[in-house]
Length: 378
Image (cartoon, rainbow, N blue to C red):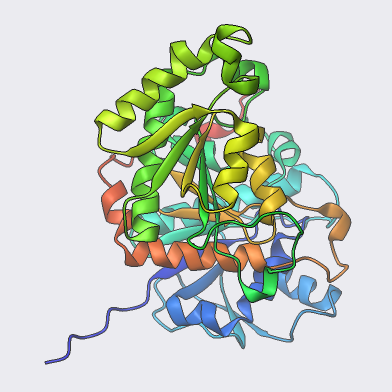
């Protein structure tokens, strides 16, 4: 007897800062039929804001905008945008400019999406780009989505890891750049530190932090690839420290982490100099890289395929993916914003939900909603 098909998961899409290109990439991605075949999509935003974006960007398709409740069971389709209004009041935002209003609007949508996933009405959050200055101007002293979600879950910032996932090259992006491409299975890069200054990241780099990042990367890649991933850990110093001539962090901090990961059963190599390991990884030599600070991982991935990369948050009891680009205020309204990263983020979120990723990560207890506590006090 055939098994009944599972209902499609519901994904809550946020536009990030509505002053940037987030609304445009969400609306452009919405018209892709394939996105609706894997999930029921909902945009957490005000209908008025989305309607104004449709009116201002002539390259966007004409679509109906329908406001629905989060528990509305209907499937989504390319012809009608199903909108969940944020629970908190949202003010009008001037597009293409940094503002406190943009930061408040972004957080209002994120809070609603978070509450939906916590209550089980949505199975994943897919976010558009935030602007950190606007976030701080709104009174939220938090570096970005990753840390905000960690704190909302009642967890320290260090409980979460940033990961960039570069899907395999498709025909659309085969000519995106002339350099080497990611291997046939794609490439994942996790960061052992978060959004912080380089000096702070180096000062606080630890063996345990690298181990936790490696374990999270291994678990995520196993779910995506369906097999045991090959992981490499980057060195911190030029040439891997040259036996201590350029620094001793490799022998003192990084190598012990690699040894612990190997004892845990991971297929892991390192520490290897970052300038060569990313070349090897891009040509299919590794499935995943543990980068030790933000730009060590972000720069090579964005050079290899910025418009198809996906940001995935690891270590939290929920599925959250995001675009890997910024708000791009200079592109607002020009009709040139590329929705490829948003489409990839939707695809990865649906795949992780189908693989039971949210059940596996739910071992960490979700605390009470702490969104209001993230706002600075006078």
